[in-house]
Image (cartoon, rainbow over all chains, first blue to last red; front, side, top):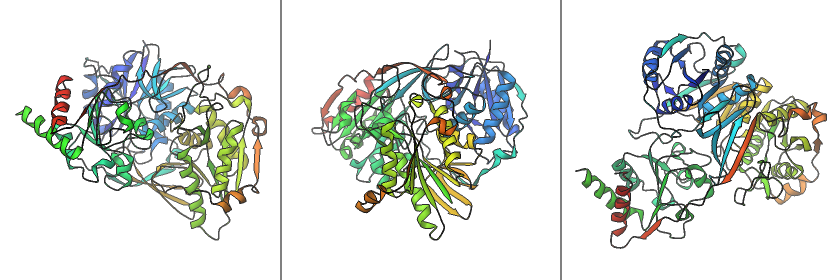
Length: 317
Length: 263
């Protein structure tokens, strides 16, 4: 059975959940191999983590020489690994960086590229959601090695023992790939909440918060949810851009999306419409988002959310 | 200095967007316009030119697209771009991002050399956001992408962006490929003067043969991916909507959450 390369999503060697989701999808296409591009010293810990989710092999690409040089060196390393392993497919997390790496890899290997898949079936048939979630598209790569980027929450991780055999892979990185670099980096401060794009539940606030996100945040915390914001709330300076859900912010696809004080402009809907269950709380019963919801409350979020938070916390005892 | 801004002609996102019977995006039957996210790219190019007052800088708006795609070029000219280039050829219809990036790269080489290639962060139709990286790969230029803030000095470009896990400052040396987000600065509206001036600006139309691109390398038949099916998402069945009276809204909300086992 052919290998399927899964690019490990991690922060300093800490493996993130989308990696396990990709391994589950990879198992449908072949034999999952994880590709860890990071500090060689963390290779064993990463291997330990991914072998519990079916990784048979773990390629460790030491990034000591390329750290800080963005996507071009990563694409080069993957190109060489693809040449060595002739995989059935390469699965990459659909982050901004992941898509750029995939784009370059597709050109380098003369391979077709599919981005933002929400499902990958046996045979490499992908499902995507386009036009603000109004259309579902199934597609397939027809040339080269299928390069597929997959959105978080597209599959459930499957715990399954893999061999997890570690193999160091020495990539040769050209100087040409090191032409743009990270001059400074300020890691995002942890909010203590789940990350927006990966969270199972997202609670977002919009113009209707009037700038007071406390009810939204307290409700999110009672649900163990991530906090998001609409573009209107971000443009008003109430939340940084990193909170923005929508076409030009983050796209989310959680099990549950709660929109509070968000009317539902098409750009916002494009970023959340694939959520499994949608709830809206809004004073304006004409808000377009009510057309999409599984459950809606016409009312003031400043009274509805605190009361709901209290009841949820009381249930938890 | 030559700045080339890539502008895409896309179906209006607020219109009823459709697919053709061959599963390509309907770009003819639906009203189109300059992709909103590319307006920020045009804006940024113009700002760079304005900030570098005294230098000789040409901003060229480049569109690869159908006949009506010339509207996207015209809009960029009205905003203030100096000249326009429209690559139009029947063979291009149905091209995937890989073929589109090939045509764009060949066109940039033809109208260049470009010191800066500026693009939006993504198109508003397919929204893949891969073309900037593909252009960088094809042109052999550095990429600084997803910029929220852009600064240039001499041949140095520095951008600030919200990366996946960190806020980053990225630096590169021109020539390079730059993509900008909607955080990079509100796009200007064309003034009446700008609209009148645009009519006199040079607008070149190129075909694939002008670029030395073989028709067999582009279009639907040459795409490296095949769309098997497109289906309109079934409309969500109307959910339950309650009015909040005397705190009943919160109770109903919590009951719904419990019924779906979220709490």
